[in-house]
Amino acid sequence: MRPVRELALVLALAGSSAAADLAYITCQNGDAVGVIDTTTGAQIVEWSVPGKPAGVAVAQDAVFTVAPEAKTVRRHDPASGTVQASITLDGGPIGIAHDPARGRLFVSDWYNARIWVLDATTLATTAELTVGAAPAGLALSADGRTLASADRDADQVTLFEADSLTPRAQVIVGARPFGLRFGPAGRLFVGNVGSDDVTVIDPDTASVITTVPVGARPYGVAFARGRAFVTNQYEDSVSVINLSTLTTEATLDTGEYPEGIDASRDGSQIIVANWFDNTVTIFSADTLSVLQTVTTCDGPRAFGTFLGGDIQ
Image (cartoon, rainbow, N blue to C red):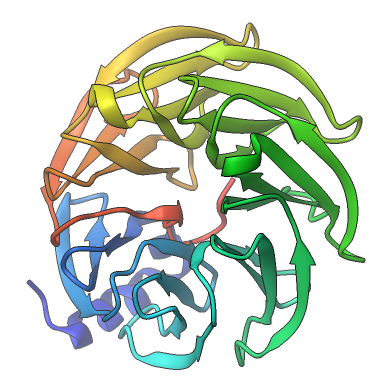
């Protein structure tokens, strides 16, 4: 494991392109974040993050983590892991999304059917939004117009106008939606852990386009090379969905109990956190083959956007 100062040197020498090659993996069991160089396939440093961190969002100048047991959201320096700000939220913080254009964070409250809106620098609470029961994953569209919440126990997704924070619609999806993300064409993909499928939504019309069957307990979604990649917790696999036909074209083997998933900025790699294996699997998004299997800290969840740089 390289010392923190070496990580800072790597970032300084490589410039902004280095951000796309670093994965910040929240490890719930280990009270840690493992920082992985996805080019070399090595964990280069580990941060201590008490409180069982799970949720994560990476910005250009910060890494945000959510520790549900400690009910704490933290802003970290991406080079050193130093905590720049923190807040304890009275509820069940779990999911997180960053709004870079407006300098805000959105954090879901599992226990109280709401979303906290935080200032991304100070982490002060600026507003609260009402959603359905047990909100989990949060996502902001690439154009910054739409905020989406996966309301697990309501079997729905709540859509907001991100600028005004005005509720726009509630869309019924499959059973127990958990992770969700906007695709490159603006469509919203929702993993339903209770019905083993993915609901595809047109956010402009707040309507369901289709439902795609995948593996058991779909959790997270990422996009690259004209495909959606969906982790299946109970099948130790990733389902690959063709974005043109919205049909499953392949299934990839992962480590045990895959959860968080993200794509490199250049779209060449898909990175998967395997909770029970304490590993991260790095796939080629072109050939769908395994490039690296990386050992990381205990209980990697990586629930959110965990790759440095601009997330597509």
